[in-house]
Image (cartoon, rainbow, N blue to C red; front, side):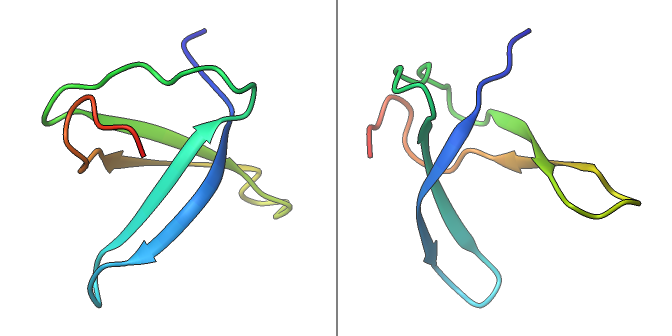
Length: 68
């Protein structure tokens, strides 16, 4: 389906308005290498009855092919 469960491994507040999130695959597999300018939709599961799954799109800001 083109989806992968991720685990948040680090969160860094870069500026007042920008926070960097670092993820790894839940199953331990390597994440695919991205290209400059790509973005990803993230679907977050919540306990809220009204908003069970919330999807937001985020830009990838690390250098292409950079591992954390």
